[in-house]
Length: 288
Image (cartoon, rainbow, N blue to C red; front, side):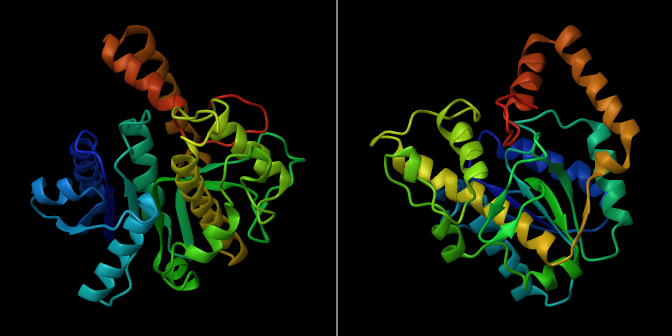
């Protein structure tokens, strides 16, 4: 088992490292790679048991994960399952012990070419979601997901392709032409709401000042969606820990509700912020 952590923020990374340490107790011995996407982070970060490499930040967490994956292959060519983690894993969402237990349990149960992670689906079953010519029945939330050795082989050990991602995002200052025809009209509508109209916690109107930042984020989101679509097209099994373990899902919802009602104010604000920042592309504007 390997863990590849994409890190950018000095504020979020310690919590993400602690999360990975807790997770490792259930996973057993893991080779751990931290890819520092911020130059200052790689110079200041020292963490026992982690190989720290400097990332290019060419495409946020996706370039970091690919660089970490390439580094593990250079160190050890043996096939292994890889858990990919973003430094937002606990800073941007409510990740309870129940969610962690369900994730570890499902990782241990995965022996076929599989993707293990929390899956989002469109709210409207009639939506036509396609990207890069591939159908998108749902998508893995990529803050924390695992690819088994069989899944990695089917993907040819490539998480994203710069040309495929670039072909999806035309950019510019006009919403109507911001995405290319590689993204279906229904999916474009979801993404425009998410980026420009309040779906994402850092969304803002598309202007000359915001266009570059929003195009970068759009490419990261398209990389996530393309990875999910490729896995579906290649016949990888999707294993959502909460879909397979409904009791932990119910317990997490209850613990979240209690944190909001009775927890310390800061913890409650963090829980609420985390749920609101979960990546989701709904047909109707709402927050999961």
